[in-house]
Length: 104
Figure (cartoon, rainbow, N blue to C red):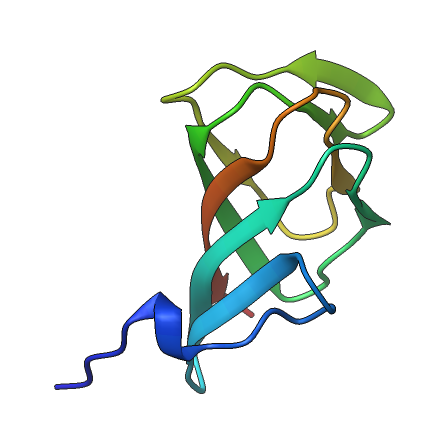
C-alpha cells in the first residue's frame, strides 16, 4: 500500500498544474489545479489512456480539434494518440483528478 496527501506534493509548475500523487510503472495520476488563464497545452500520449474527472470548475476541454465545455462532475476518457488539452477560461481556479494508464 502507498498513501500520500496532495498537501505534501509540489505543483509541477510554480503555483499550478498537476500534482502527481502516484507515478508507477503502469500508471500515474493525481490532481491538477489551473488558475484563471492557465492551460495544459494540447498534447498526445502514444502508449497511455488518460481519465479526467472535473471536481471544481467549468473549463474548456480540447480533444481532436473539438472544444468541449465541461461541467463539474464530468468524466472524460482519452484514448492513446488522441490530441487533448485543457484551458481554464473562467475566473476561478479549477480542480481536476487525472489517471494515466499504460496500455501498450
